[in-house]
Length: 136
Length: 138
Image 1 (cartoon, rainbow over the protein chains, first blue to last red):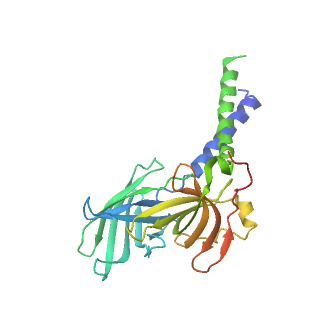
Image 2 (cartoon, helix red, strand yellow):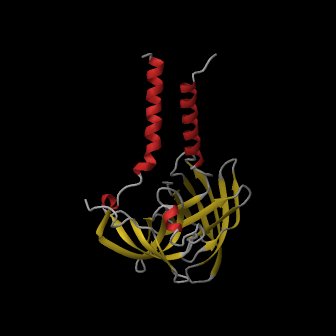
Image 3 (cartoon, rainbow over the protein chains, first blue to last red):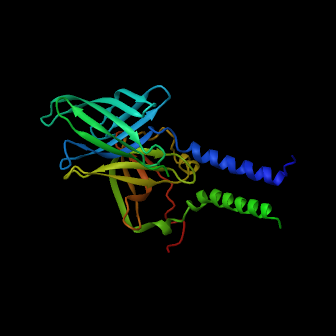
């Protein structure tokens, strides 16, 4: 079968542009996420989480700049897109407390994917919801 | 003209239009920003997009009275332009506290055009390659 150069170059150009667009999206976990956490619907605290994935480990920060806390023991299970990390924080009285965060990434195909789960600090139970910032 | 040729030409047109979108992002200052709304704010860097035609960075700004946080997006010049004013990709990192002087976008969104960025930890001030004054007011 003979393929005309014009058709071939058009198809190759389309593939190149599509590949470029896909490359910009990055890993589903990586990026900046905004949302809130709290014990119930009435009491919520603003929350920003930055996460990155180098292929082996998850790194990042909770609330960058403001009382920021680095992620510790962070793990990602790409089979079900569950995420676990821990941070050192302070409770309402100012005492140090360890927080364990477990969540699941949903809407993987969306550029506004979500991460929801539990946000437990010491004996205090809470939940959180984050939405990944859109790439422009 | 055969239908297959028409189809391919249409496809090529769509591809060309898609490729032109980044060029549209390279807009004039007056089209998007209100020079009568200069703003200065301090915040923590949450995201950096080092790309053409403009570098963007985002900061969380905390209201000290309510504790509420708003995320602001700031546009700078092209990477090549701000590199000439001293910027490198490592000048600003996630979590850095910065003071931004710039101009707010029209429409009241949390978005602006940065004139300068000062690193709160060191006091180092860098120009942001603002396009303000380079195009006529609209």
